[in-house]
Image (tube, rainbow, N blue to C red; front, top):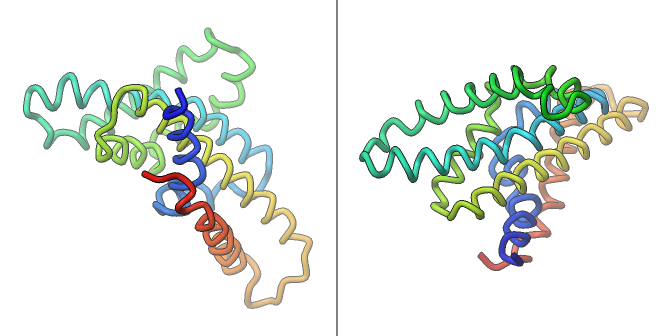
Length: 193
């Protein structure tokens, strides 16, 4: 159980997919203008990434590897992401109506999100067990959400700050993301791999 929690913590902070892997930077930059939009995307990722990670593990270890079809991995993973996104969109209201109303808006975008596919591919590259795959999905979702909410809060503060004209807009956002990345580098070495 402690290894499960350590893997979640490691994926969220030490090996954050946005900061260290540069996976998901585009959606983070696109959705950081308003806190309610960022929160909706975070909820979507918290639901979608664990499901996709576990599905990718099961497909890879039960179908692709035994049948020696590893070269279809990318095609199968993209299809899986789209299928899970559609299933959540159509059947999510049966699980929780309030949550479905919040994440239903972001599910089409999440289906083509680089974070989701990148997490699946990283998960298979690590070649870990089923529970570790689930922990990696949860940790990646938490890490994505944490960085997205940090960036959104920083951008909201920068909108009212006195930023020099050449740095307004995307330049100051990229500088802020670089500073957050350096702060996350402080977590390196915290957990021995």
